[in-house]
Amino acid sequence: MRKKTMKADNGHYYLLNKAFRTSLTAALLSSMISNICSATDALITGNMIGPEALGSIGLTIPLITALNCFMDLMFDGAIARSSTDLGNHDIPGMNRRLSAGLVSGYLLTLAAMIMLQIALVPLSRFLAPDNEVVRRGFVDYMRITAGFYVVQSLLAPIPKIIRAIGNPVQATRILMIVSIGNVFCDLLFIRLFRMEIAGSAMGTAGGWMLSAPYAIYCIRRNENFRLVNPLPYLKKYIPDNIGAGLPGVLSSILTSVMGIVVNGAVVRTAGSIGLSVMTVGIQLSSIAGAAAFGLRKSMQLVGGLLQGEKDAVSLRYLFVRVLRLTMISVAAAAAVVLLIPEPIMQLFGVKDPSVLTQGAAGLRTYIIFLIPLYFTVTYSVVYQIQKHYTLATVISALPVLLVICFAEIFSRANPDLFWWSFFLGGIINAGVQLTAAACIWKKQKNCCYPSLIPRQDEEPSLLISSAYTEEDTQKALREAEAFLKEQKIGKKTADQALLCMDEIFHNIIQHAKVRKKGRKKGYYNARFRIGQSLYVTVRDDGIPFNPVLTEESLKEWNSRSPEAAPGLRIINRMNSEITYSFVCSQNMLQLRWDL
Image 1 (tube, rainbow, N blue to C red):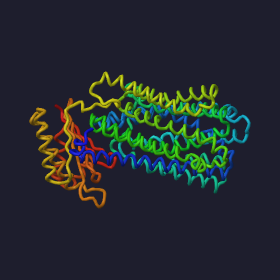
Image 2: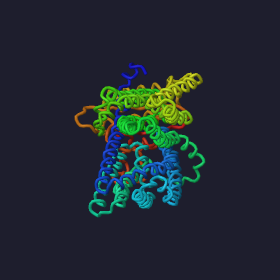
Image 3: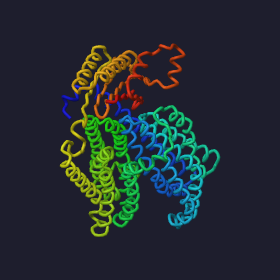
């Protein structure tokens, strides 16, 4: 995108960047708190109960991950697509999609949990054949957890829904209550009540139980989400939900398989030294991945809104920024490891000089793998947003499959090259991704290679930005009037749209107090788009305010005075449809006129 365009619309890009920062900050804070509390949870279990209990819980993690995959397959795809529905003014469709994904995912997870309970004892013998204490703890933990998992599976999607419909801050608060509540309940049940492994299981469930009142309050207060009967809509939404959720689920499953295969290959090639290097590498990739995870989630939310609004120009700008930030964060982490691998390994408890000497080269080679890996993972989010599900799935799964193949081949044929299996897997996957993008790019001339995002908006549109001043507001109204005349919009529709914009703009500059203290002015913008209808989306960064007159608000206004809030009555009356959302700490009002 040309810098000249960005400077001309600095108010728009200010609001876009602010929404992105809000989402990113919430995602990073949530990830950081979750990781700290998970580590604290493991310390409490290991020190207060014993290493066998820690081993028992460690065996449950892959099974719980597998159970979550059933919900993710049906529901995470709905989450990924719901922000696009929101940006496309399709609030009822978003509710139907989320309801279909939630109910189908819950039923599938419940069936999988019942089957798992039947197979727990045989599984324990397979996973821990030589340790009776670990097996018994594993079975007890899973059986106690199963009882709470039925309720937990209903609560866990709530923060995802709240984030998807535009409030990542509330979602982060819920997850913080869960994480901190988990630690509190662990101390309560393990330390005070001496419940050992059962206390750890109840501690996990206790965190979700403590978050339930606030989570339910948040979901009930949000006017954009209402659970509906999903049965009539399963056929329409489930295939799309599965397509959007498959890349993440398949990647998660294959990553678990990679862990098993690669650990076996590491033992064959480098023994305990290799395992130490692998453990440190995984920890470092988790740290580097926290930033990339937050960036991808923010791209999914804000980018989905832009895709729904068909704002290709802003979507390209956002994608370039996300890709740049991802590469900077991952490259910085890789550079530190490349420069000082031995001190970093010492930080993770590796003290043996022979391990430090032999493991440094392997760790350096492994860490380079992160750069092409996160490059392709970032692109897969764009493909997911634009419904290139097959390409997104291939890009997500291919690096893991390649690493599994190369790790097996090198560990048996040439152990000295074992660590290069990670780097080769990432490089080949990046090449495949770029080749596939180039092939699609040749068929779609109006797109930006290699992201496949259109170079310009698909429909006639106008973006106007304004500061909270009367002069800028009048200029914005004149631009809107000229655009509507240029597009030959009917006089009645144009007059109604301009009257509504006049009222909305003046309400913003008079009443939308800027939330951040010390800032003298804020920005708002309006985007006019002409498709089958005339669409107008207005954003401002003022305090939350919903101008949509529902039956409850009408009763409140009428109780004050029958003629109260005449401007709001005009706005609500002079359009075909009006919706309001508070998205990423910004008011977003969407209006539509039939043409």
